[in-house]
Length: 110
Image 1 (cartoon, rainbow, N blue to C red):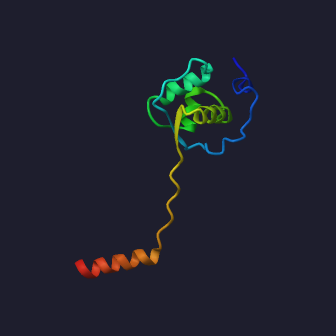
Image 2: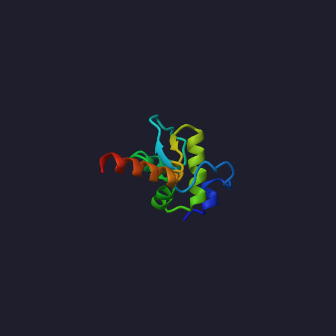
Image 3: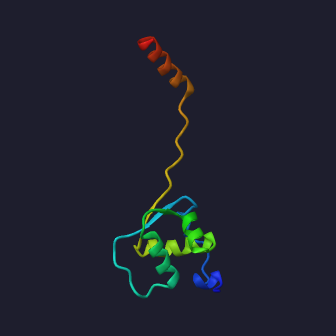
């Protein structure tokens, strides 16, 4: 068993704010170097199958979210990952506008 701080070389969560639990990640289409840590190789293997959320990656790797975010940040900076931020929440439509549309449809089509 390796302590989590050993995996990240003692680094913390600074600079990982672009990753939240639902950020989607996949491996970039480029060759990977042999000098990567085993955890980074495992992460790239996992992400090679398609888009996964940060939470899914942490679950599959059985590592804390903070450690996974640091690894993702490293791989993303080096160009080995493609990151898609979560889709922002849609704003609620104006109820009065929806009612006017409904009234217009009912007046036109009965």
